[in-house]
Length: 318
Image (cartoon, rainbow, N blue to C red; front, side, top):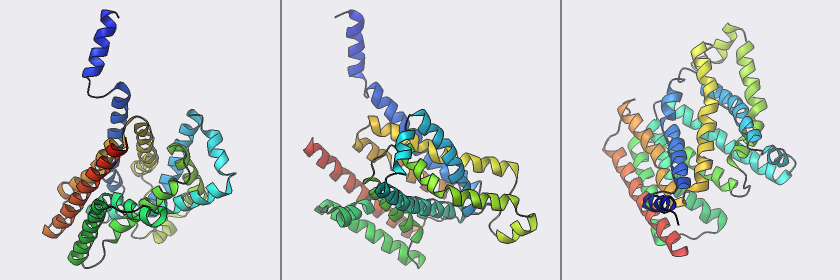
């Protein structure tokens, strides 16, 4: 063995991550940071109707992601899904759930309810446990039961505090939970899945965008009164950018999943809702009183229990 190769092996052993894991970690951080600052981006568009934002998001996401599908030589996989009736039906369902998730998230940002949104994404892993139990026959152990119970108590506290169910949190958690559950039945690369879903929504989204674009100004204002329809160049550029904001983190996450362990991704996934919470409190001054602190505290404890239990189970199986 040469001195150069020996020193190279020593350097690799002393490194905390392999080169592949380092790429995966950078990709994961990129994905979760983009998701984490997304409320700021969409807040810049709060004068625009959420439905208009979603329509542009679909149109520009499809254009962007189709380039990725072609570049990664997945066009045949993309076309094949439209020839498979079973997969197409499943993707129609995932499209409804992701569309509902996007619309709720953007509405929450425009209406100063980012904190409720962050709670929804904190709850999501615990909702996944329940969905696995109900639809996949998975059984809860005592630690998972405790984690889910703490989440239920947190929702009860929020309900008592604000007087109604925290429906923003629940819709975000449940819609994304069902979205992930259905994706287990159609294992396809992330760009392909997003391309299919945006293709399904594309005719409706494009039709709405064209309607707003070519409607007479007076009629447009009447139709979107209170929704803030805008033709300004800056707003239009931001609307085009929603395609990149949507597709880019998904591409990065897909790359991260190839190189990182699930435990690492599991820990990093809480970065985005944590950033949402910080942004809501310190940038947009959303109220964070003792009741909300108690609810979030219970969720955090539940997630710690869930994460430790998941790590122990994976160690036991390896």
